[in-house]
Image (cartoon, rainbow, N blue to C red):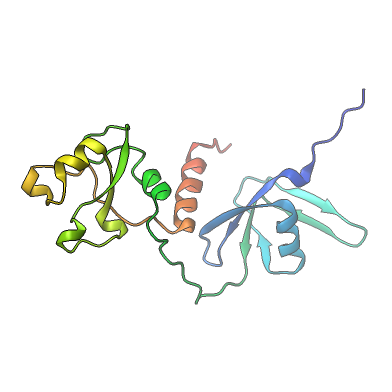
Length: 174
């Protein structure tokens, strides 16, 4: 029985911005393309781990992290429009008034009939019962309290960066 070496190209690499902010995770093939075209450079974060890729004309050492050399500073991220799936994800699939996770609906904190807009900062997940109790009234009129202040989702790079650094804290560094 012949033992096959692991397929090195199945590995992933974390991409950092020019300013060392973690942006995303890409496959090793894409990382090789960025390195060969000199659009990125390998980073040594002190763990001494790297992959060596050989071709007839070049040998590349790739660390699990690379840094982009350039970037478009004018590229802006726009907050996505409110949609049910992302709203449920943001609110952790729970009613923001009673913490129920049954029969969830969308509620406008300031009702649209009173000038409330359909924006992330005014929309929450509510169970049918709480939504009916509240109706088209303001929170103080019915004595209800939100569990968390509604806000727009974070930029994907910020969310990825938070997740990346949390996982780095749990990794043993020897």
